[in-house]
Image (tube, rainbow, N blue to C red; front, side, top):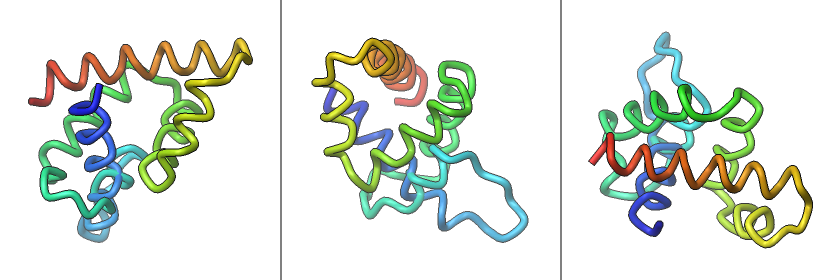
Length: 103
């Protein structure tokens, strides 16, 4: 799970470095904005592509915020709210898929 979180966090923070005119998704932007050395443009783009196939637009927006504030992910993970539980399960599946596809 840690490699995926690192990859996902990197992906989100690197997105801010995208050239003007290039439309990046919320996850990719968050990856590109990260200060992680592993967050390359190609990795961030790959993670965004997996997110586009795995998560809804709303979920991608929520998850992208976790790059800047990982505590928000922990709150969702530990929540007993049914919607949070579903989001966490989808996020975990997304993370597994991204780890397999983007490494």
